[in-house]
Image (cartoon, rainbow, N blue to C red; front, top):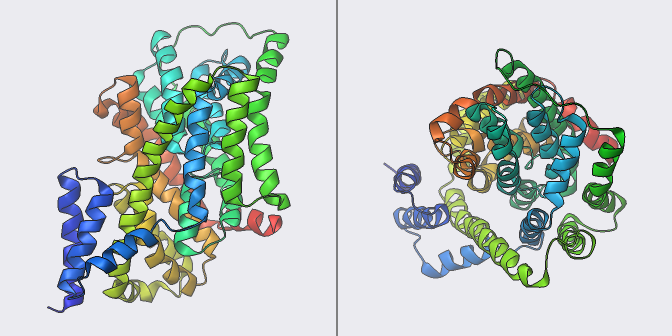
Length: 431
């Protein structure tokens, strides 16, 4: 057995063992990379350290901590709550209205924070107690909120798109544009799925619609929140600032609104927000650093060539190749979180897709969408864990409740495989 085959075995078994023990994913990637370096007879602590630093030494990655900070400020400064209040004012009176509120709020919040975990936590904290009080089935409600939360990685601004763009040298602005139509399709799909789920469920009588004055008042209160995505997307489209600078603008805008417009945050509370954002940033950045070590050793072992050999016969049929890649990524997504999936597998799979004539921006959108779906698939299901923890619901109930919405997302993913123009046309139009 050659050293390359040994390196592949070390990578596969190492990740399985480390994930099974519950080890931090970043540390697992570093140890796996070190093990691969050992069997390749290329072990050098200085080289490992250099790759750790290189994994986070990137200007575009500065967008990650600022988007995380923007999400924390939105939740602490009342921005997220005002979006939910506006959605409830307009559709809360419809049968199953709180579900539609969750979907509408998820789409709007996705256009501001770009973080699935932050959006899910905000939605679950506010809406799940209301749903429980009004007699909604908790498993289905939790599944809907978890499914709505993963729209955030698709609709711009999106932290996973930033990480993907940095990792594969793909235009982040083009990736942002590519997510608009699929993100709206996800929201529309959830509406149809929620209507289907509501059949046969005995819900309390719907309240009377609010007067138009009350609806407009709730909309005015959410004005500053809705202005945020227009500033971010408009600024990037007009060339006023880059995606990285857009993250800084989003963070300072959220801070200004929280302090001076809504006045729901005091200056001493900023410290706690910064600490929470720093902790989340540290986790993400250590993942990026560890993945760089593993990725370097994967390249050194020439594993991309092995994968190319396996998928080579499908290069002549791009749609079939895309379908096979999506199936592989679905399986990977059940075990790996979105960020390490991007960092490890995107640089390996993208060259194969490009060789088959697949648009790199389209492939990036499909890759991130597939990874986002992995956030609500067991056994890892990070977003499922958030909803279960916030709502104090068993993980088994949440998994059972998310199934109809998971099926909806799989159908959307399949539709985008068959009709890639749904992604590529807006990108070419916006260029």
